[in-house]
Length: 160
Ligand code: RP5
Image (cartoon, rainbow, N blue to C red; front, top):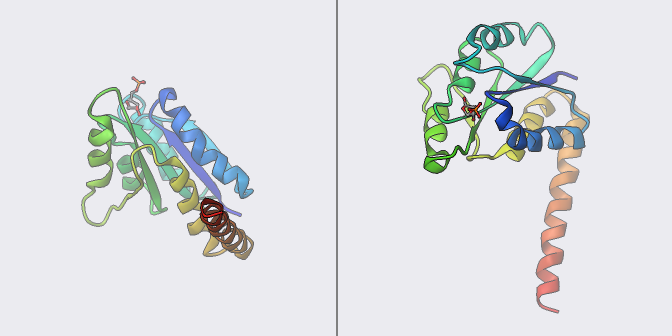
């Protein structure tokens, strides 16, 4: 199975990013985590994106806050799908990172999830890998069914 590359702009993004990693682990999807900053370590970030496909990665998740250019920098240097997680910073409630991540020019897309939406980044990465991994598709179907059953049970409990 192809791996998911998870990159974050700073160690301070780790508490958010860990939620994506937990989802991948739950589904048995292999991943690697790295700290590469588009601004502080631009060469390492570029090199990771340039070589990710040949190293067996199938998707890249990139998390950054503030002037969040990491996901865009990844997308600029690979044709792998890139999922961006805008991280909430100390100011502006993450709107700065959301707009920096989502407003990509045509031809270089970043699939942007919600501010701090790391779990959905994990699920989206799994959905992409499931296109060519039937066992993952089956796990996703089971997960969706269990999620629906749980909500219907809670609904039923409300009216007891
Ligand atoms: C961004 O700046 C990082 O992704 C992080 O979200 C934010 C703050 O970084 P630190 O100053 O905590 O290292 O580049």
